[in-house]
Image (cartoon, rainbow, N blue to C red):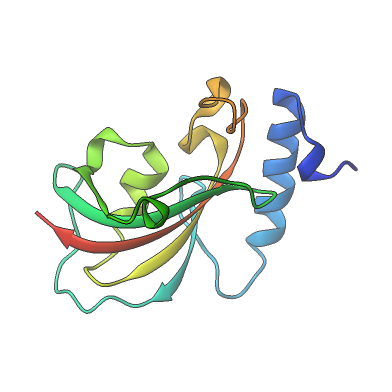
Length: 140
């Protein structure tokens, strides 16, 4: 078996993601949805409702590859991000709808719910599974 940190080809990325998510799913604090999205609740929310896919949401987030390399962070930019929930990767659209305002979740997103075979930029390779910490601040 190879290290996830050394996965370089799309096939290796896919295999590393599958191995990681298979092991992760066995943890008692991890919930796996029908699509394969995995999440854990870091902080329960205090809000009364969850967003729909067509809502705008304001979030703070940090995204990393499976080996822990950070590729994006609203925290580092010093301000949360606001966007329509149906205009982000499918793992986000599905996952954020499970949250309530004030909650913080960690999403473990399989490649097919992330950037798939194309990857994104130089930091997210083809078929890469991703990890996001997401804090739902506001639903508009």
